[in-house]
Image 1 (tube, rainbow, N blue to C red):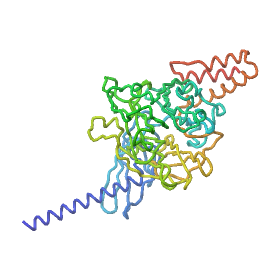
Image 2 (cartoon, rainbow, N blue to C red):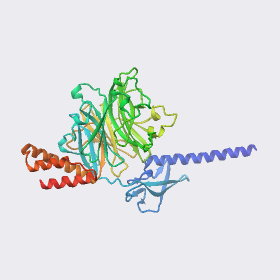
Image 3 (cartoon, helix red, strand yellow):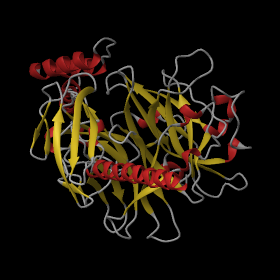
Image 4 (cartoon, rainbow, N blue to C red):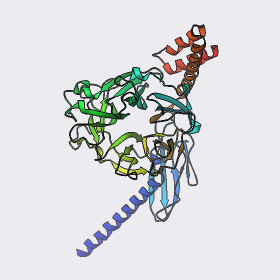
Length: 493
């Protein structure tokens, strides 16, 4: 009996060791190829060895989108509309292991270029710049000569100034933007009291809803049901850098369709014990006109601002960049953490306390040494599993930096200063379709031509024509319609 038990123990240990070895090798391979098997977009160089063992690769698939050329998994084309099963990749390891990896091919992004939507470097306004796909999101041409894209006095209902513009593609095909409502130029302080929610169906004409948090619970759509994080809302003196990401899991509990826009921002007040900026969140409805009460998102015990969140389909995690303040310059700067779910997926779980997800710090960007940085933003390059991570450096020579990163938003390179005659500051990036790109390009040219005509002959037929054209708003196919209208009008001029 003792011999049998000993044999069983040896056998179990051997099975565990083999299983553990396969698990370790599997993780090493996945780490080497940066999880791209989950969402293939570009060629992947497969490791020829791992942990001292050689690997032979074999591709098993039924479609014609992939091929294996030596140790390169070649993506020949991308499907148009949806993620597609790419078969299996087998790894035969010289230590006797055979590992199997399912492959998924990501859909074509169908994008023509990039939009940089940002706060002006010299005023509290929002500007646009565009860049082609070929320039990979590092080179931009300013639109309308770096003039504001809308009147901040009309958009910002509290102080008449907008900072930290963040643009987002809505799930219904429209466009959303959030800004800090603030005018340091007027108030001469770095305090403010609310944010602006903007929406547009054509990227040109925007409407806004302003939320002045000092007005208290009554301005929020869950005013009678949700808890209050502040005893006195009138003491709120900082609501900074809001951003947006869609959360399909949010339940409104009122019969409305599931899902909401998760808006996150930093906040500070003079309430007792509120001695540093913490991250909070609210949810906005699909119409982008209602907002839930602020709830605590994350408290690091030290000031943090300027969060930026992306969902990454390669490792299937949320990646969050943020600025952390610290006791010295070495501790300050931009960090990255990861987590699995947004609060909408945790509404009915008793374990959700508000300090959401116990964020795991995995990266501190130290490219700028002891120089100070803020305003991080990230975007995946069109049809690539590579990212751009951007931020503003505001000491040691002001500069807006764009840094390359791998498929899991790590291995960040030294980057470069943004190219083009832009006036850059804290902002955001969005990819554009061909219609969107060329419509914005034509709008910029037509706007500048209209300004020229207004200065020379404001009563002329051409001046009247440009005024009329630029004021037009369309409900159906607005971007495509405006592209044709602006282009044809320019030809007439």
